[in-house]
Length: 357
Image (cartoon, rainbow, N blue to C red):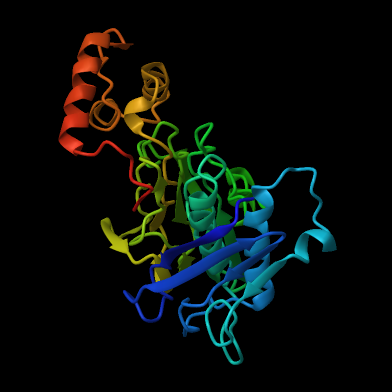
């Protein structure tokens, strides 16, 4: 790895208690010779919500990112960990002290991965992916059956990866910092008083790019018991997953509740929200960022995404400059060439921005 110093900041929307108060995560990577330091100085003080990190978890997120850009022959043993120093001041969200709450710290770990990758992307532009979806979303629905026996449903919605320097991000896949998968709808419906109305990829959600962000998942739940309480741990509603080197940011997350025939938007983090029989909760995972200039994406790949209903014809034209004849479902090469000239002229830059948020 090259010697140098690189700094990057990303944000958590809020902690679910102080709504609308962004939480910055800042890391500075310093590499000199055979030593590397990851310094989290400048990161937010610990917060009221249960998303504070232990030092061990901050180290794990840091090691994961650094390991991913090294040759795969290097093993995860003491020889790998020894030359990497992780600095995280006590009393920050990166190294909380009692009585800080930390049960939902997975969210912070996911954002730390995005933060370290943002710094590594400056060091190694051709090896680092754009921001993934921001981590899985935790959904909890609990209540009582008619006979007053309790039910508790908890699952984590896994989603997609950011665009890579060599390929698109993975669609509908677990975050690379998570070792889990999305439970099947059939098992959930067998064991819980819930109906899964949809589990589908969301068109146009991934950040545009030469290598687009993966397509994230939408999942909807209908309650089949008289009443329950909904809680959700989500993020990336305000601060979208970033794109790299001309790639665009992903779309934000979204929570909706349809109750009494009326649909309303919810905050990213939801606590103690009542549901009644027939109510529907819908969650859209945020889209990962894209990598590279979208006007350099091969028109045939854009057409394939349109045919697979991952990208809309409008996005194909507006974002990728690819004009598709919807009657013949083919690329209009001449119109595409003209459209790309128009878009390049309108955006006004010749060197792709390193980060797009």
